Length: 276
Image (cartoon, rainbow, N blue to C red):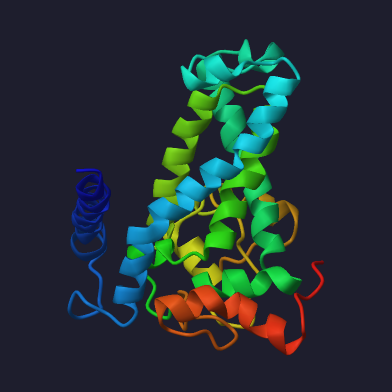
């Protein structure tokens, strides 16, 4: 029964999201691409069905900061196991809605810099896997290397936990940001008009995936373009739309080849390259 549950749940998720984005891309967005299937779809589907395994691995890594909280006397193992831990200190004493707003801001700010990190040095080959999609749509959002996925989830979560935020609020915020990240990859030409510089849009993020030299290493934010505006990486021309998507280096098209891609160069150099 356990095997069936692990198989059925992602299948239902794929079908549900497929219906939602069929409506968004083809009915509301009037997608121009003919047919439903596209190159790379099977690779993306493989990521979709294994993303749960990646998330489970990330949760295991979260035990380290939780153990530190237990050692520090902030909480206990029993409290964590019973899911009765709701943060600590002045931060946890705030209303839930205020914590949610603060987590959104902090997670998005940290996510901006983590994203920029993955566009540099030894981190880039892991992120190049995500950029290898040449036919960008909602399903290509899940094409993320496990190392990239783990860092994306853990790096913001650790400081948020150590600051004392309620983990249940954090989990709710994470769920929304995950769906919004999928939406940003949708094959629609939406920029939200007067809000184009206020909140990230599909056009904003599709420029990030464009191989246009002017758009490379631009638009790193996942929710608020404010960070790109402040740090000089904002790019949203009004006279044209993003196109010509894909990585700026050769990346294998198959699932297992992509998982191996970031490590392939290590053996040529006899070890991993230094991180920036």
